[in-house]
Length: 357
Image (tube, rainbow, N blue to C red; front, side, top):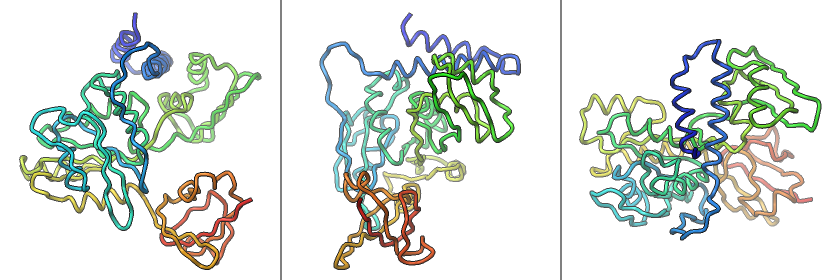
């Protein structure tokens, strides 16, 4: 039996199993097995064969945004409108067959926008070059999920399922669980909050499925078995996602209002160029970029865009390993200049001077 057949069989068993107190251990084990098989499915094939055109695009600019969606939802039109890059757009599906990068210039920042080929159902299993598309999406800072407003909620649910199955968690934070495998001593299990969804026995069974018999586990929040499995696997990506409903000029005003009120959602029309400015504002919020100035000897300031924590590689790739401390002037400090470390949270238009070892 192949991996795909095993995954389908486990998914059927999970859907058949009635969720109650008596079956929670069985469901936990099934989910652990499912995560293992999906991880094996995503591993690159060792068999020799002709390699297709790659999707690798050098990361550039101050942030990267991945534009994903089903075929013919308006991704290429959106890229052409927002950047100076022309992406072929047509009324037939799969117009875009490779990754096309563009740059959005906004508030002084350069945001790299990647127009990825349309995803189809089963992309996580490799259909329609889905694995390559998803691999690029994992490298983004924000995902923009382009949806056809005339299709209702069907596309959103299918895309979320595909991304979820390959370890991309949208608009979620990393589970607050401390996990460390050991060489001996058995399982050390503790929690700082009452647990309603996981127990020590269930945690032990899930760890045994991964051949882990000695570990330290500390739950700092009430997490689900799925979230604990994510911590064990360790390769999950947590990123913000903006759901963009295109073609709103083809639906009723009541439906537009319903979609616009959904969390993390924006309604637009690429054909009529409606609401694109508001979409840029929301995208800027989700990127959470701030501008800071680096101070050099002689008082020369250079403007750079970073995320809120100190990111030395934005200035130079070798700086993080040589970092000793930094002096910061601005609203993020109690006094100026203040000596800070790598965990200091910067604020807009702070000035920083980095001291190397």
